[in-house]
Image (cartoon, rainbow, N blue to C red; front, side, top):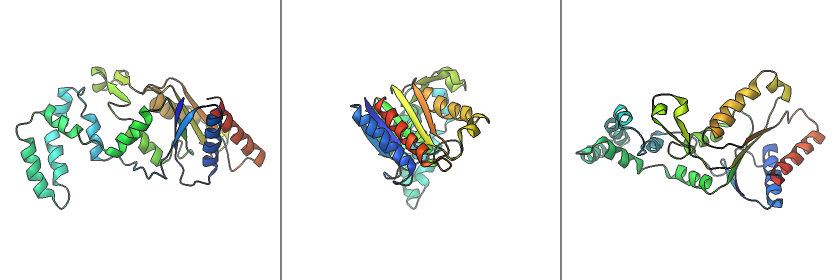
Length: 250
């Protein structure tokens, strides 16, 4: 299999990086191919901006939804920003002239952020995804959370049936064709703190189910390496051996 390993840690000398290195070593020994997507090293921008709205201009979006989006106003507001705003606003008004909502939507859709399209290509050419990142606030680091928000877009990771556009989650249609997702997270606190308080179940729902299963990945595994600053050297060694086996047995 071809595995996309998405790594999110600011240090290349962290224990999280050691987890990634052992995991990919296991992948290689098992004959898999892999690509490491180091979000910090690549300086990925996790901030969802007005430009990302272009992904919602898919042909499948119902006309009644487009009517509620105030597309003409959005185009004019975007054009008016910055020092060249007045000139760009004039050009935008000229471009809008005579166009219906569907034509405006098609025009907006042609300006999808190139950095997101590049990330989506990485996902598309992979059979599976592995995520290696520490646990921050019972979720992912902001750069990784932003990667999912910007990359798992409408029309790429999911689409909606009419029920979905009416607010019914059952109307969400998965589009991802990844065969497997493996999430590996070192933690600060011990295992009992997650399981006895319900935090582990909350993370399973928000990360595993909503982040990966709903977009179409049926095989999702979430592995924690608990209390990395509290355990001894032997346990850390066992953690790294486990990371290697997760790759070898992937």
